[in-house]
Image (cartoon, rainbow, N blue to C red; front, side):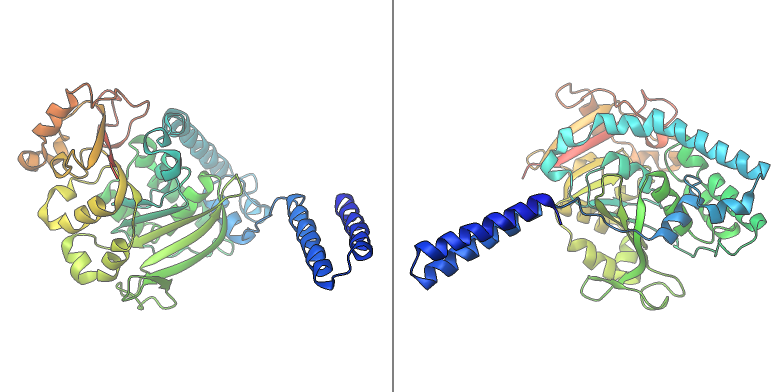
Length: 407
């Protein structure tokens, strides 16, 4: 027993005897003893060791194997002295180290809480059109307690890597590293490439990449479950693949994570169509869920200018109505939808025309009003110390916007 606790119990016993001797009223004696017990109990809490939160060792080891970080012995034995495996791990470490030093670390130093405030930095983070990109929001919003990602890509399933052959596993890990090529170079996934990678390789969906990101952001996995949303917009477990809006596929997946500071985080990914047609007809449960959110911080990058179109005005309105803050590039919500009476605007970089990939729609997605706002020195806060999105080649060709609701 803790020595301090023993001493407090002895003191309590002694004081109790004194009260019994000096007081004739039973009620007062009882009250004094209750108070002393409360003191001991409260003081005992202050000397407890920090709460240790257990994690799922099997899932965490699996994530670390996929991410090629701290590889458990049972996985390492599959590739003993395999030169191709060692080369792959070295390449992955180098690629990740490069983006960590040039991009991710700079995001942390910049610290978005300087703009949105510490009290709002723990708000739920909403990331539409995300793909499986947990990486960038983890470093931009490290204080968020819940991350909600949603995109069209299917979750799929993980092969049983512990019981697969070493050749299969090596191919799976090589496919994973190749899948990350655009994250390494550009900071975003390219939809058409993802479609091929997730359907024509050993990956079979994006769930493996979520494990990769969980490992590479130094999280341990407490639990993982497949989820869907009921008719009231509430998240529920998905025990059958045909339970929700997707046929023979899981609608969503949820992870409870433990970070290096022993803090619990929740990561949620929904596979859904968030166009008007999707939110109104294909997966209306998701629309209910999103409309139940409030005061979220929203992040948008490399979103193909979809919220410029009326066919995506449902998700656009959800972001406008439910966000406390929105950090986006010009592919997000056009600046004309933000009333200066309701939003505080900070601009970073310069306005750069959309890239040539979208030249057929230049007349729709080019924002001349935003271009003029960037010339206003009261709005333009200078360059960011990192690059994101379609203009990734040149840090001087960035056009990020941070919009914060005044209330």
